[in-house]
Structure formats: structure tokens, C-alpha cells
Amino acid sequence: METELIRLLQEQQRVLRLAKQARPADGVPPGLIGLLAELDRMAGQGCHLKELAAHTYLDPSTVSRAVAHLVSLGYVARTPDPGDRRASVLSVTPAGREVLAETHDWFGTVAAAALAGWTPMEIADFAAMLARFSRDMTTYLSKEDAR
Image 1 (cartoon, rainbow, N blue to C red):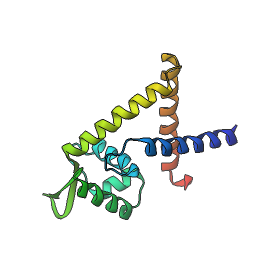
Image 2: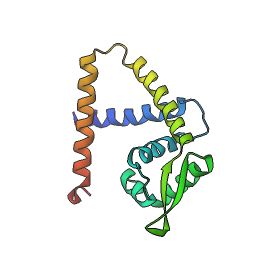
Image 3: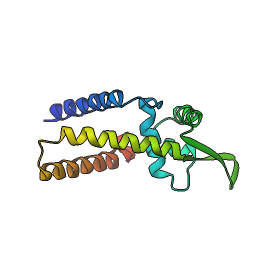
Image 4: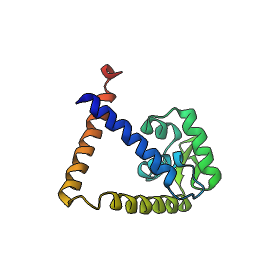
């Protein structure tokens, strides 16, 4: 059972990579859409790069390069932090939100087509189990003894 679960999780990673590659080209590299979406979710008033890196479990230098690219594309804005002039606050621009909306619409269409043969109950059950799995994995991996 565990071996099959691991295989299925690896398969899902492969499917998600395929989805990123299949997404219509809009100037945003596939790997940056997820970071842009996370920034949008967590940055009601904006957030610091360090917070974004911690939230996404990515190295700050990786996030710094990605954010610089998103800024150059006009999808993320950096503004000085009024409380700490050495720091910048990151926020998604209207153009960035437009790209996210287009991506969300595209993925919604793809997911609806993939789930067309599923019943509403199957979809609800799958969503609930996936949410629980993600929550439980995050809880476990956040504990010191899991490292």
C-alpha cells in the first residue's frame, strides 16, 4: 500500500508538471505561476520576501530570483516597507492578478474535463481527502522530529 501511494504521489507530480507545460504561454514561466499565486493568497497588504520563502518552503535566494523575474514582467511590485526602509513589501499587480485569473480559468476548464465522468460526491470526497492529506502531511513535516 505504501509503495503504491508513493508511486501515485510521484505520478501526480508528473501530471502537474505536464499541466504547467500545457498551460498557454503568457510570458510567465510555468514554475513562477505557483509562486505568484501563493503571493496573491498571502499578501492582502503585501508581504516580505522572507515570509514568502518560508510560506512556500523555498530557499530565499530562489524566491529572490523568481520575484525579480516577476517584477521585471510587471506581475509583482516591490514597495519600501514603511516600518523598515531596508526591506521591501511584495504585492501582486493588477497585471499579475489578470494572469492568475487566466490560469485559474484554464485549469478550471482542464479539471472539469478530466472530472467529467465523476459524480459530484466523488469530486467532493476526493477534495476532502486531498485537503486532509495535505493538512496532515504539513502538520507532520512541520514537527522537528520529522526532519
